[in-house]
Image 1: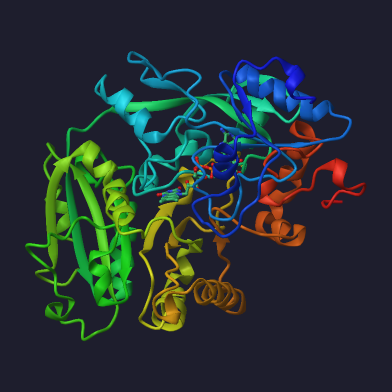
Image 2: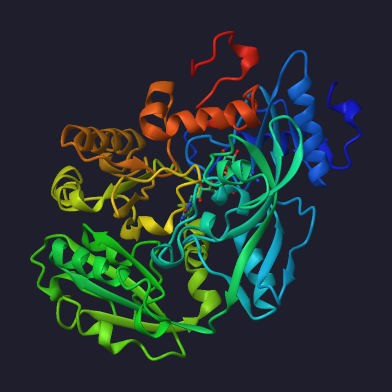
Length: 492
Ligand SMILES: Cc1cc2nc3c(=O)[nH]c(=O)nc-3n(C[C@H](O)[C@H](O)[C@H](O)COP(=O)(O)OP(=O)(O)OC[C@H]3O[C@@H](n4cnc5c(N)ncnc54)[C@H](O)[C@@H]3O)c2cc1C
């Protein structure tokens, strides 16, 4: 009733179809139904709802939902309103060509940002592998892909934000203006405000991409080459690659895994033909913008298996949108809407060899249920003022175990088995003293969150007290409990 009196321009609904969507996410690991769903038609709508929650005598929560591609219910709330940011485009993208930026609604999907900027020959610099994610959703985490070694994560490529704080104020923030809010929100897991507009830096869009994959049987040779390639970040464009990633191939089927539309069926790659003797292989994945020379000088210093280089050429949009093609295929087979117990870790460079021995060659036992990405990033490309958490080393790796549970198959593909393996991996890291940090973190106790943030916890907590003192935003992250549910806060 409180909400109905607000005079919202958008639609507040309890329609079962809307409620069903808002109760679920990509992970499909849990379902929580909200009290109502708001399709806002402006930032003011978002502000009105948050202000009402902030001032409410009874108390209710507000969770922004982008495209719902979280794993563990991070955008869900059972005690309040889900603001469905994606799909309700309040404001169309506005590209400012001269100053090379685009202003976008917080719920805009990256695929639509890309399409609108390409019309002007421009494109954002830093990406995620998959583009059907919202701007607000990835900026609440970091937004990483193979460009991060060079441009930093997406949160480092934002000039300005409009944010509705947990008090219901709509504020513009940037490095110069309301900077504490700006850096709090970037990588802030939705804890400090709802991003309604982001001003994203652009560069001239490359036209085509040369996409190169190279196989290794030796992990240290693979990571050595990756580290060499990312160390070139400050060189002129002609002397470095534009994208550096990599993945682990732990069983033969996976050379053509769902992330990979790369290896042509007309030219199937037989792992056995590469002389790996059934052991694990590693695949370096790099790209070079097509029309420039392909940096032969860099090529010469790599240590891959001779005759294991695969090259393809494609338009820039097709390269960036590569995972969506795989998604469409999986959907037709009913393999997309299944539980995804994903685990994403940042592993310090000094321990990545131990991680390989203990996890890829150990716990995973030469079998997996989805792609495993491994690629390094430079910490100096991450702004320490943001809320994002990374390991304390100059170079750290993303290890992404992107596995799907398929209960009708062998036990090793079941949800329980994969969840147990995730716990084993975390325990192994803990026991071996490998100081990993979870990316897209999931914890359920305050102690674990404090451990996650380490020295950064005090700042995170202070920012929470300043921008969302009643702790009503993004409660699905399970960092804080709303004040109205507890007299003593979890954080005290
Ligand atoms: C297939 C797939 C591929 C992926 N690939 C990558 C990748 O390559 N790189 C990478 O970095 N990540 C990747 N991710 C993870 C993804 O970036 C995060 O899960 C992200 O949160 C998803 O965005 P979303 O719009 O679906 O967010 P949601 O799941 O809807 O929301 C995530 C969190 O952000 C909050 N939030 C959402 N919108 C806003 C807003 N406007 N303002 C403030 N808070 C908000 C929510 O409350 C919630 O806490 C991938 C995920 C999937 C499923």
